[in-house]
Length: 88
Image (cartoon, rainbow, N blue to C red; front, side):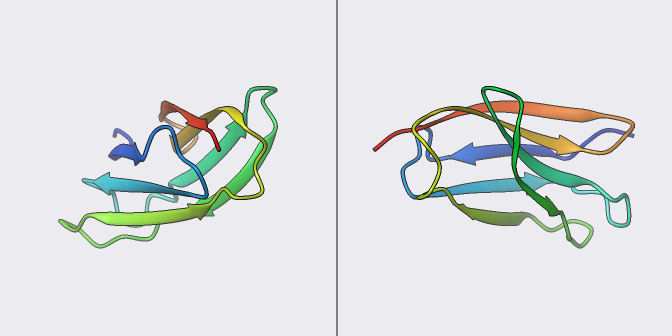
């Protein structure tokens, strides 16, 4: 079992950050989490997708302080991470 591959864009982001998933695993309780550079959780959502479909989750980042963030996708078994920058 592996987490769905994903990309986060735009990077750097301003007020909105989109996360697009491919090969999501339905029913696997995978989550999208956003953490700041201090390791604090700033956003969390469950990934709902159908087999063979791409899913896009859009996150409002307009209230996020400028800086480095980590996008984590996965569950207890496996997690994939991407770095994104929030800039103004």
